[in-house]
Image 1 (cartoon, rainbow, N blue to C red):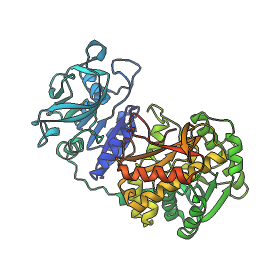
Image 2: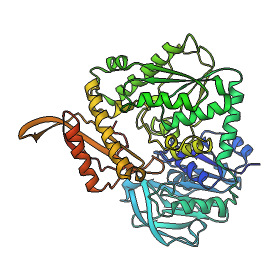
Image 3: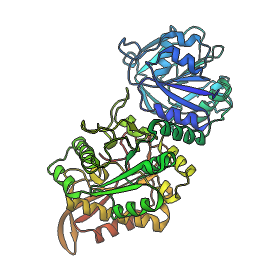
Length: 513
């Protein structure tokens, strides 16, 4: 039987990141909602269970809870943040609000560890952990010992080693926690006894088999953007069903400079599929005229995408399945399940009611970006395609702040093309996870040719990350930023100022809208 670890989802923002870390250690992982019956968990017979974080308070009866019987199964359990508090609360400990004591903590926190605890064995006795909590554990349950503390949190971690129950108030799954990945590895291998035999090939084989079984002899239509996600989804679908796949590329005029032609040329050569291109810039700009609210723009772009898509293909492809390259960050940031909604992603907008597809296929919906790239490489996709930077579904519509017009899109395209050209020339592109230009809709006073100007400001955004759930702003050398500023101002009409965004995620998102 395949060794499995269950991540029990209580509504936190980092839930899939936990699963991703588990898979990094070659252990198969399933995410289940906290509403899953205990009998289902018994059927799976997991090697371990991880309780996730969440935004609620465990002492609130309306908050997510789980039957205490889960602690009697003899399965190792690790509770993280809310999951740690839930464990303490369910087993007779005390969890109270930080309003009673000044112990709420957010961000990087100096933490002291008891290294005789299995989770922290062979690790430094002090380090930085990433905290995000209002409530705290005031008293651990019987049989538990305190295994980590901070200056303000009396129970930063606890353990009942005999019953293999562990809880950490911090988030070991994020990069900001020093040695957090090692702590998870210790739980998987030393506590749960995992062997680490699962590989990405297993995911591909299982997904291909699942697609074939689901689709049968019917057709599949994929909305293809040319980005990494939809490209890898197309490759998986092509491997599974070949010419039963039709890829439809909606060129809404919000792509990067000359990108529509690149997409068509690349995919007509790369895949054995039906390829349909729809040019519809005027329709999109008309629908967006006068709209500046970011959520409304996303809704319009997403809805119009599906309307154009369906109106074009309904006569020829009126049956079968609809596929899309949704990945987990799309779902978690759109507020699927119990996770707090951050923003709506275009491929999370509901399919119009008159679409008569038999179902939706999202083969990458449980993967993070780096895992999607790994799948692409396993499938033999070209390196330059697999490692293309993420591009939002609404395209430049979320990088033109305020109203979207053809002139503003052209300004952004030209500035963005210069950024990409310079980064490739100097070789710095490989140091960055994502970089692009934003047009904030701010005009500033300048002096050009001894004359006053009042023109557009553009912002450069560049980040480094390995999961896109958290990200740091990139420390691009000043001389490169200087060249970028000079070129953009000199070569792009109606731009007289360039600024650089130095906001990390959190508190900001990678995209501005």
